[in-house]
Image (cartoon, rainbow, N blue to C red; front, side, top):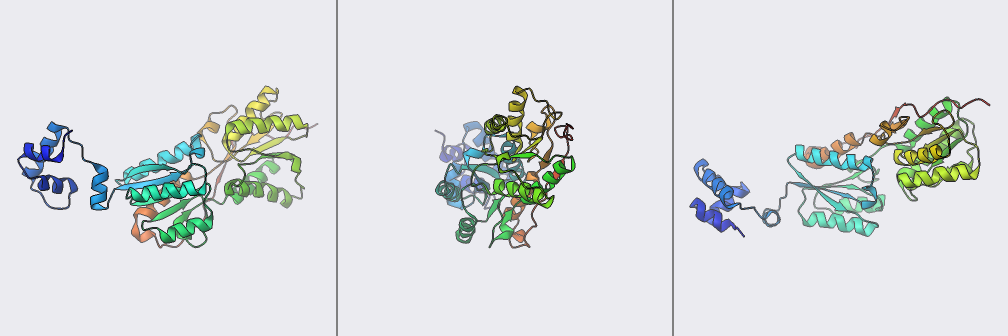
Length: 336
């Protein structure tokens, strides 16, 4: 195994000089640096990055905590990609930590990133409550930002979408198309995003003078498979509906398969809509009407808050608004 001492001997300098050159803390002449760089290339030496982090207390890295239950889907893949590219643009390495399946696991993931000396940490929480997140920020020695969760005491350290308003806007659009029997596929139990989207669906109908039919609300769990099962459950119940609004695009695509298998044509016989503007919905047939959620902008703001000291105590950002994307999967209901 090649060591820093091997590099020093080949370059004809001391071990301490090589260490200073690698850390960049002390000036090293261009001639000496060139000799060290050449020695590193010839020996194939690779610095022990973890040891350097512990010695310098700097890592040039940003941590992201997200539970593995959210990895499985194009929306979150796009989110992680955005986090990685924006971290790279700020000369930082993104380190992903798995929040697994409990609030304690999410805490453990945060602790893990802190032990790695991450310069800052983003959390996309599934299990940690708002109160727990506020307490973590109070106690953290590095800046922390919560994504897709509105914090009470640290609003300036959170970026989030008004999911209720998004759902109201989408449901109003479906009502304007003439639909009065709109089914809804929920998100996973306990999800704040799912709860707000369900509330918006119910409130928009009440606003229009419609009493929602509880039988038209069927459970999902964010996955395509759960949307498929929800679609089958709606059909098996035999309750009339003209449109289905799924709490995310993945479930809408699953429901579309269930309707196709039953011989129903979209949107001639049933309309379908979702949330998130996932890439899967753009290329479905028919293309999916959805609410675009500005995740790229949210991640961009999160990174800016974390890595720009002047932004950390800034005025809290207002919630992001979604954008209605009208495609081919929604049409007025057939008469008769």
